[in-house]
Image (cartoon, rainbow, N blue to C red; front, side, top):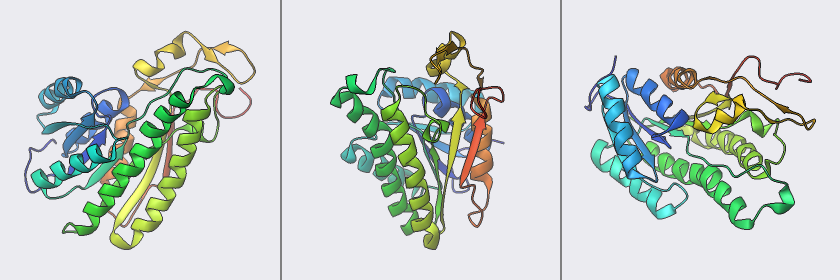
Length: 257
């Protein structure tokens, strides 16, 4: 049951919360009773998403524009959350980007840097600010959930920037779980395989496989990712899902195809 903004509502921040998987996660958290702050770079997109999500769930959605790769913008984002709510119970590091699948030697430094900034630096900066706030607030503690990827362990062809950053997210997850342990801060990671969004529409037309074939791949509704995040977020802080993989059952990941 969704609740409105107030003392009893848990406060969640979903980065990249206005579109795709982030929007599905935001909807699921609203349905579970969270007040949800959604962030992203485009305020118009966030405001449209907040209006739609609020109407669908009768919950409280707060849009705040922020580029997670910009340290000053991240500090301002968390300052706004602290000023309005006084605390943060859940951070979902979902924001990310990718570049076209091209041979590694053809990647520009700007392309590499853009993916590192969005996928890795952004998650670090938000985690840093969340740790600061969660350590200081009363009651102390909170939870951080990182959007990883099965690409971290099983990359696609021509995906060096994305694969490298998602592999690094696993390290960030483990370091955060360790460093947060003494302060009642839990950190886990969800690795997603082909959730149906605008980014995965190409799966129906076929994508490059490791053996050079072009093959179609199945997808799953993004709401399943939201449901999984709600489960992770619903646990008491004494329990943690360190890693979870949610994927289309028939996608070519396990085995040899």
